[in-house]
Length: 252
Image (cartoon, rainbow, N blue to C red; front, top):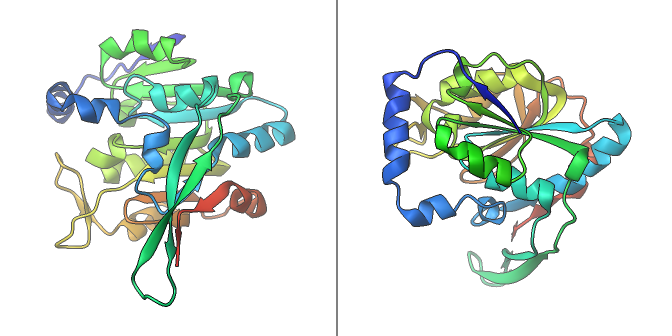
């Protein structure tokens, strides 16, 4: 695994995030597995099938970025193979408006992306390097993502509780500059219930989530309470393929 260290020093806000990460409950740290990013979502996106289809067309390994990767479990598991797991579809009862029944939605075990993808992770923690390598990452960038000079564009960018959680106004423009014209951004944006705006726990930034993405020339493909999937506005991605890989988990 290649290790790249960001030359720019950490700011005081990054130091605060590092300190907070250390004090997070163990249950939260264990949360960052591939299957868990879809729990509570209104949709499941089959990243592996999507990447496999694009790999066949592009004839090259696809570039995947996990921004705020922690120990690299999420996309690392996707590369090595994800165990079977069960999500739940909420299906409207129809005659009882507002009532839903949970129906099991089983995701089968996967073979993994293997050499069809190159996985890059970004973390603030030097101590994540050993576990990231064990989890199958190809490169680990240590330092603030928004201060790193990326040397390539990515086909899939994932940010779950990463920079977009803390600094959305920095992260979303960054991703727009390093995503392929037909790329996919999967991002978790928190919600401020009182104002209807997203907030970063440390920066206290406030933005309308849809406007933030659209202002940075992203087109939203799917969304729910927290999860957004978007692509560059002048999209050249295959919408039919995307829809084949998107499974609704709430059916009204």
